[in-house]
Image 1 (cartoon, rainbow, N blue to C red):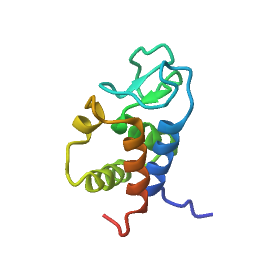
Image 2 (tube, one colour):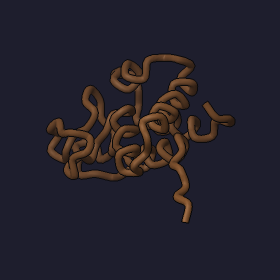
Image 3 (cartoon, rainbow, N blue to C red):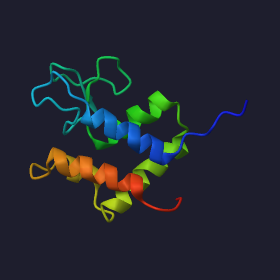
Length: 119
């Protein structure tokens, strides 16, 4: 049986699920700022930690790639797709900006999944 290869779009789809997941964290979403991952109490944790329930944009991509056992190149493809959706703007600065909303992050991830073509 041939194992199908995970794609950047699949990583983005899983990352979107992680960010969209309802949590017991303060704001009730799976999204955070300033760190890759947090637990339900708001403490910084490794993105691979079972306690991680909130992720920044890059943390969600990293966690999704980890869960899907995606190769590094696939995670990079997912980041590049999101980067193109943001027209080359710095993903970290956008994620961490006080003016960025949860809805804007989710929309960017969803639009990045619809981008035609391969990297």
